[in-house]
Amino acid sequence: MYLCYIDESGTSDIPGNTSHFVLAGVSIPIWRWRDADREIVAIRNRYGLQYAEIHTAWLVRKYLEQSRIRDFENLDRLRRSSEVRKARIRHLLHLQRTGRIRSFRQARKNYAQTNAYVHLTLQERNALVLEVAECVSKWGFARLFAECIDKVHFDPVRAKSSVDEQAFEEIVSRFERYLRHTDETRGQRNYGLLVHDNNETVERKHTLLMRNFHAKGTLWTNIERIIETPFFVDSQLTSMVQIADLCSYALRRYLENGETLLFEKIYSRADRKHGRTGGVRHFTAPTCQCEICKFH
Image (spheres, rainbow, N blue to C red):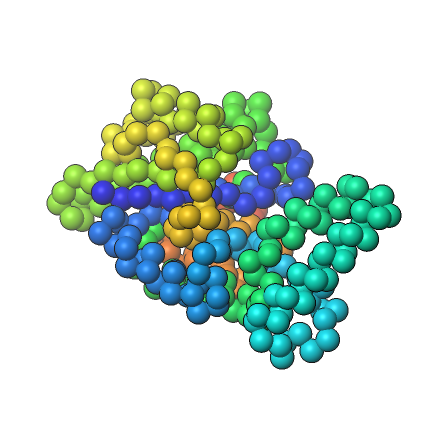
C-alpha cells in the first residue's frame, strides 16, 4: 500500500498572480511512513516548531519587523518572539487608527500565517527548509509526481478542462502507473490512496473527478490500483502534506525564478523509468530547455 500526499503552489486562475500552477504528489509506502514522519518532526523540533506547520512560502519570506529590531540575530528565541509580537501589535494599531482597513486585514492575515516562525531569523528559516529538502532527497523509497502548468500555454477550451483539473488527472495517472510498475519489481499487487491538502474550493471537484476516473478512467489509463476518492486532511497536522507543499513550491520557484537550491534536492525523487523523468512534467512551449523538459 502506498500513500500519495498532494498539495499545490501558485494559483490555478488564469491569469492569476503566478505564471505557473504546480500540483505535486509525494508517494511513500505505508511501511516507511512512521520513519519519514519522525525525521521531519525531529527537524521541526530542532528549530522550535514542535507544533507548527512547515509552510514553505511563509517560512522563506522576509519579515520586515525583524530587520527593524536592533541586534535581532543575537537575541534568544523567546526574546525574538516577544519583540516581534510587540512590533506587530503596534503596526496593527497604527493601521486601525489611520483607517487603513484593507491594509489592516492583510497584515493581520500575514501575521497569523507567520507567528509560529518569528523566533527564527531568515537565515535559520531558510536553513530549516533546506534541511527538510535534503532529508527528502535521501528517501529512496519516495517518489515525486508533479504537473507544472505554464498558464500562458494552457488553453482550457482545447484541453476541455481547467488548469487544476488537468493537473489532478495527470497526478492520478502517473501514480496509477507507478503502482503497476512496483508490481513488476516486487512481484505483488500494490494499491494506493490519495491524501490531499484540505481545500474547500477543490474538495468537491476532485472528489467528483476521482469518481469519474474510477468509472471511466483518465485520458491515459484505467484506474485499478488507486482506491477510494482523495482523503482531505489539515496540512497543519500532517507532515507529509507539508512535504508536498515544499516540493510544489520548489518546482514553481525553479520554473518562474530559476531558483535551483531546493529544486535540485526534491527533483532527485522524481519518478523515473528508462532514463526519463516521467513523474514530473512541465506543460509549456516545446522549445523549453529547463531541466524538467530535457529529461521528461
